Each structure stands twice: as C-alpha cells, then as structure tokens.
Image 1 (tube, rainbow, N blue to C red):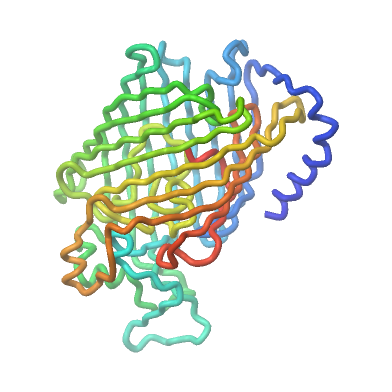
Image 2 (image 1 turned 60 degrees about the horizontal axis):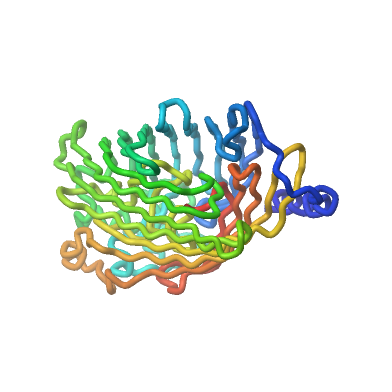
Amino acid sequence: MKRILAVLATLALILPVQAKDNKDIIKTGWNFGPLPVVGFDSDLGFQYGVCCDIFNFGNGSNYPQYDYKINVEASTYTKGSSVLRTYGDFKTLIPDGKLFFDVTYFNAPKFGFYGYNGFASEYDPDRTEWFPGADKTDNSKSGFNFMSRNQFRALASVSKTVSGNLSAAAGIAFYHITTKRLGLSDYDGQYTLYDQYVDADLIHENEKDGGNVTQLRFGMVYDTRNHDSDPTRGENIEASLVYSPDLIDGRGYSNLGFYLSICQFLPVYSDRLTLAYRALVQANLWGDIPYYFTNNINSMFFRKLYTEGLGGNASVRGMNRNGVLSNGFAMFNIELRWRIYDFKFINQNWQIATNPFFDAGKTLQTYRLEEQKTAGLYSGDEYAPHYTAGLGIKLVMNHNMVVSFEAGKPFSKNDGTGLWTNVGFNYLF
C-alpha cells in the first residue's frame, strides 16, 4: 500500500506540467505494460508479484479500442494464496467477432467458508471451537470460517456479430477444484464450520474433497459501449444458458443454469461523469450443483481475476468473500464514476478517477436449506438482502489498463466486520 501511495504522490507532483494538452496520444502497434503486482485484499492479505499487459492497437484507427490484449501474472498473498494466470482478448482474430481465453491456477490454503444461504448462517469472527482433547493455546486465531481450496480454471469463449451490436456467443470451461479442512499450523486442533458441515452431511462425502466441472455456454451479447475497460456511455447485456454435464466424476452433479447481466453507462456530464450500474441474475434451472461450485459466477467474458460471489471484489464489495452460497442469486451494483484529471506521462494517456459505490445481493434459490435446518445450523432469514457501500480510486492508462483501489463496508455485521479494502485491476463491470 505504501508503495502505491508513493507512486500516486509522484504522479500528483508532475500533473501541473503534464496535463496541459488534453488531446490523447494515439497509440499504434504493440504496447507493453510490465508492472510489479503490489496489492492488498482484506480477505487475502498483501499481494506481491509481477504482471504484464500486452496490447496491439493496429494502425491506431480504432484507438482506444485495441486489436489484441494479452495479460500474464504471477503473484502471491501474505495469507498464503497464490495466482498464476494468463488471459487474452482478441477483437480482430475472428471477422466480426472476438475470442477470449483464460487459464488460471489459484492456491488458497486459507479460504473463507461461511455456510449456506447468506443470513441463514450466523457469522462470528471470534468464534473458536476445538476438537476433543486438542491443545487449546491462548493466542490461537480463529479458523472457524476457513478451509483450504485450490482451483485450476481454463475457459475459451467466442462471439460473432449477428446484426449491428448484437452477437451470438459460445464458450467452454473446465474447473478442477480440490477442497479440504483448514490445515495451517496456526489453527491446529480447531474444529471449523467446514468440519461441522461435513459431519452433518451438508457437504456430502463424495464432494468434500472437491471435483471437476465442465461447462458448455451458449448465449447472446448486446454491446454498445464506447470502451471495454473504461466505458463512459452505452450498455452491455449478456444472457446465456450454462450446461454442466457430469462427464468426469460421475457423481450426479449435472445441471443447467441461466445467467443474465445488464450493464448500463449513463453520461451525466460529457465523458467526465458517468452513472454506471449492473443488474445480475443467476439461477439453477435443473439438476444439482456441488457445494464447491455454488459460488461461481458464470460470465462468459471475465473482467476480474476472481469470478466468484457473493462477496469479495468481484460482486458485492465489502461483504465476506463467498459470504452467500446458494443455488441462485441476484445482485445490483451502482457507482458514480468521476474522471477527475487527465495527463500525459511516459508517452501514455492517463486519468485519475473516483467511484463511490453501492452494492446489494440476495439469495433467490436456497441451497440444501432443509438439511441445514435439520442439522441445527440455521440461524436467520435466507432471503434477506445484503447491502454494502464504499469508495474507489482509479488510475487509468490509455482507457484500457485500470489500477484500482476500493474500500467498502457492509451494513450488517453478519456480512463482515471492519473495513474491506482491495488493490487490484479493472472496474467491477
């Protein structure tokens, strides 16, 4: 955090010199943006590593739209998680269409688990329980709401223009997930919520160690945005059906889901002030979802590193990450994006912006609710909405690379305590 603030302070010193000419530098050809990864997430800790954004703007006639974008990242967090990722967005490879791919490996020895159905599960950040005969140390931190999870994710999606701004889209995704109880030495002897759920068969024996998920996605996309990463006007709508056949594990977890996301960007004052909102619904139409996949958001074209919710930096900012696990959910995000200042630096176009936000989410379809009640692990209203609010600061390069700092707080203590913060990349939507 100190290093990021130092960079911003340095930029502030050069703004009066660099900001006189507001006309964009037109970028052409290949542009490389290697950066150290220095971030912070309340759920994951401090992040450090390296990444590189690689853009190709062609002859510059479509700037700030790019022809190709490729990103590579290797980073780790102080709470034990690590990320290896590469993704690409190719807008001219397919005539009148685009190709998107993502290949990522996540290692999370400390991964939040807060039970099923939102407020149906009680949250106490200081709760500590022990196995019989365990050595109860006085300075032990609470591991009650944690488990271990690793995930490998590979996805490819294509879209093809049907008419005007309307495109047909299809994709295939594969996830390999391993889960187990929290095994870090700091929490030796503690009995966790994950252990409770396994003992109560809320997490079934055939899924407690994770498994494999294959998805086939088919949908339509309507997109009139003027930019992909930093839009100031237009709308982006994605609707899709997601079929997950149980091809590998043979455990009966085939299902069919529906996904709908509506994003709109309304100019309030020129391109300086934009009211942006997203309404998203995801529902299970048929079949069963394994517990380790109830948090997945089935978007076809990713904007964030993590595509999970509700809670965390990809959905309802300020809530506990994965604070709501359910068969179906809805969420709403609204923010006012104010582009405060434009300037030129190292032959690039830069902006400083801010985005106060309000987020909300709720369960639409419960997950194993009757079993949760029978097990005595039900504590509240599963359909009650979850609310958060906060503020973000953005540093934008060439309208395409967005360095983001956001801080938020939930309205309910059951969704988390303290101030949630995140340093990363991109707008939420």
